[in-house]
Length: 454
Image 1 (cartoon, helix red, strand yellow):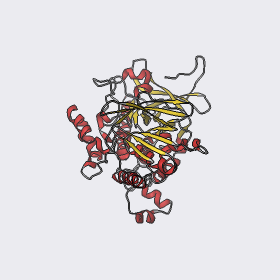
Image 2 (cartoon, helix red, strand yellow):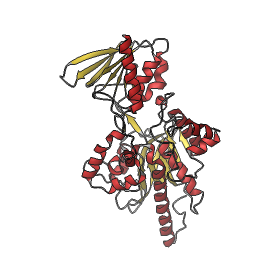
Image 3 (cartoon, helix red, strand yellow):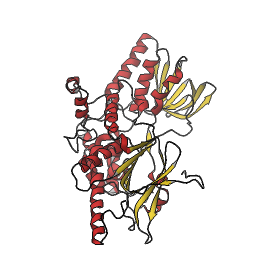
Image 4 (cartoon, one colour):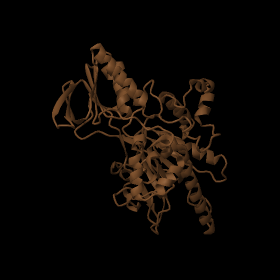
């Protein structure tokens, strides 16, 4: 954890906000909308602010391939499942951009990833005044009262000018996203990339197109990378390396998709641990290491046509494990191992892209000293209430809410867009209810309602 230099002064904001959101991707953007819609009708408004490390709003910019589509319906946008009449819906975005009729004629519930990103940017722009971009959260500390109680937290932030700011808040909502995952033995470099950087780094190859590219991984991003690189570099050999026999199709059938319903979160949360383990296993093929059937068919047909033509640029190294990658001068030596007989070989390529997925960030890394107040389960994961609030010691009335790393408690949709709208609303409802209860308590003690909020 990074802390300010010894002796370096930090400015302290005196107003205790109701909410500070850490991260401003789709999840906390959904939260900002839910707060705004709550404030439009509630007698007690919630004050909130967000901190985002990126210099501007962006969501997986490196994977905004021109023809890649979303894998969820546009109706699972930031608001519709919670408030179908919201002015922040995808349909409202289409109407604002004079494309509503055109999208209807488009004939699909799956917009391109590029268009959905434009929708998110459109919504985020309306909260620009509430977001501190280019800022990094250094620590989240408990504000311990004289009686040992913790009624608020202090979020320590390094702003875009390098100054340290300390912002008190009654509640902190962590939505720090996912961290690119690399297998053991792989280190990112000039010619070793993660798929999340594909589009942002392709320009580095201008003027020197690769002769051979390897893509490691078996999921949707891996298949999209293979497809894009194969089309982008028409003279290059593109090698797909994965441990399966072939790409596995995503289960996008109607019954299987019920695992992403808001009601499924209630079912999962109340289920015994063994049932949770089985549910995650049964339905992993709705999300993990699976590919849209249409893309699988496209790649297979392309590979077959190349074999017929006698020029096989698209190669599949299946049942093969990547055992490490090392850059040697301007080449990468990718160690590969057969899963069938254990034989090893070295694949020499100009570029290796690891499309090996993501992992949630560990909230405890950011919570620092406050982590001592948080309860964990038997394997060290944070215990989480149904309203996404971390279970804390009795003396803590401040709230820490999680958007993302709750798959072990809330199920498969925790890191996905499917329940963003409903989850954001539930968090805001929880914060508002606890804020109202706190106001009642202060009034019962003869204190002004705002005694500890300004």
